[in-house]
Each structure stands twice: as structure tokens, then as C-alpha cells.
Length: 247
Image (cartoon, rainbow, N blue to C red):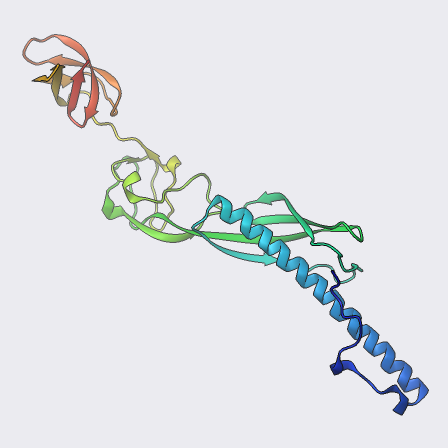
């Protein structure tokens, strides 16, 4: 695949027969330099286009519903790169946050180089709209879905508000901050000393009685409770806030 024109275009055509020998020589050199520059620009543009496309495929495969901004550093103009007779090969061996490096190689004629740049990836995620105090339970009024740059986030993020509502803030969270799992803890459904409803099932029959939790517990955990009627201490699984079930 040739990237450069075999002959000069009409825009650079000069009738050398109407010029003096010196002027004609200068005109020929000028035309050759123009053609060389055009060729170099064409190769550089091809490299930029194929590296950008490889970066898009790489990032959009991981996060399909996102928006990319790619800024590549220019290829060194001092490099004398011959036109590649086959499609360029692009690999992405290094990425750290927004920084990325691409290795571009040509099989025939054989040459390779590295292209560096920056990539910003934007996605609509869950963000705090108001400050959330450490230890408080997160509610819907604290949250909104907004576009944020995600390559610099430390850890994962949330795409649905209901995955966050009901959890407890482990740290103070400022307004406009993207919510990550590290900031949250699962809220305790039952706390020590809380009154609870003890439920026991026997086939299709459900028996309920009152009790008092003797431990903190999250949904799914088994804790000790005291049956308020009998005074007996039993083990029961937390199934909802204020509700436990005897196996």
C-alpha cells in the first residue's frame, strides 16, 4: 500500500523549461521537498488514525457505554519512515491512569516506533450531590447520576443508585464525589438491644414472637436473640431490619 503519490500533483507542477538553470534546480528541489513532507504527513496521519482506533476498541470493549477523548503526542518529524506496504500493527503494552503507550510496527519495510498519549474515559455514574457524613445511611436524596472521568478513579464505581441506597458511609464524602465501594459499608439490619420479630416456620405454618437482639447483625448473618416470652436464648438468621428467622 503506497502512501505517497508517485508523481507531483497539479498544484506543485512547475514548467522548468521557462526558468533559468539555477531557478529550475531550486524549483525541482522545492517540489521534491514538498512531496517528501506530504508523504511524511500522510504516514503520521495513518499512525495517528490507527493508534486512535486501537485505543477506542481497547477501552470501549471494557466499558462499552462510555465517551473517549484521545490526545496523542506527535510522531517525531525527524524519523524517516518508509510507507508501509501492509496495514500497520498496533499493540498497547502500557497504560497507567490516563497515560498510554502504543507500539506501532510495519512488517514491510520493517520498522517500529512507540506513540504516547493521554486517554480520558467518561461514563455516567453515581455521584454524591450533598455531603454525606461518616456513619450515616445513604438515601436517594444524597445521590444523582452524572458523567465523570473514570480512568483516574481509585477502585470501582456504581452505575445504579439503588446499589448505594441503604448503605453506610465509612468516611466523610464530599458533594460532587463519585461513589466507590471503598467509601461504603453494608448497613446493619439489627443492632444489639433492638427489639426484633422472631419467626419460625413449620411447613406452611409461620409462628412469630417478640425478642431482643443480643448482637449486631447484617442481613444474612446469624445472631443471638432472646425470646421475650420464654426468656430462652436462641440463634436466628437476620432476614430484614428488625426481623430474624429460626432455622
